[in-house]
Image (cartoon, rainbow, N blue to C red; front, side, top):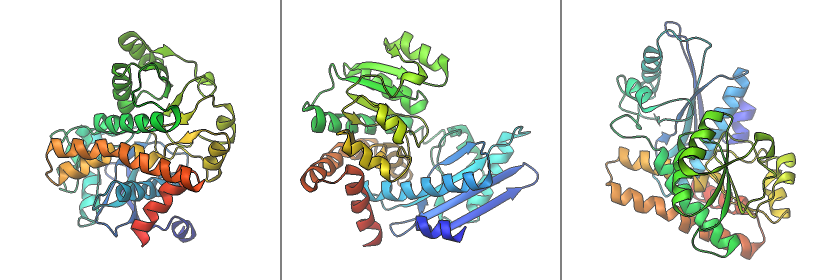
Length: 339
């Protein structure tokens, strides 16, 4: 465990249980040089404790890098609650988790993530003030989508040579809260939208409402498009899927899109522009962090739009140095975090 923590440069791992509710939770804190760790709470089943720990650590690291390049005075953290097969009282479980967060005395601030909702955050807020994305604060998903839209525009400028998205063909994989909100924004921009999701009902809804074209799950990576936009879970870009891609750029909302360190180089070798995930999907973090600090909606919206400017800079440096955008982004973030 300690070797894994050293590999990820992790500051702390906290494990919690609560017999009364069945809670089993992990809070990973990666780096607090810039401020208290902030990151969402993921609630899903895991095949093993090792898998849950690895997920928490990878996500926490991504949050540190995301906060650093977003210019936030926040550290990076993440929590995962291992979802049991049956839950007697979901509200009680999240209240118990709130007590766990409170025990860290402000060292970690939580928010919504995969499997959790503002209602869950309301339950956590019964026990601690170190929580955002409550019903009152609002769901950050639309703000994440706005940031991703700014990033897609940057990718189109860099690889397609155009400032607008009218007529651009985009393959959007994953229609959860962020993916659906992004689909609406893209169609409004005049995008030719292809969509896929494990949930056929979500696909039908976007097809019926927005006129998107459905794509079979086994044809997602090989679908001809200008930009591939992964908005589901991570690890989708690996040797096999990258070999199938028929696009000019990858720009999406999913965390940890690269299956391993070699994936960025494989994309680069194929001439596919990669938009670093923790840069393009920082809109939600900006929203929850700055809302928590009391910043106005107008100021927050401006900060989210600046995601495109950050990516313009990364792409320009990548081109100038002949290095992948992923390497450039990592180097910039590590310069801020480690000096």
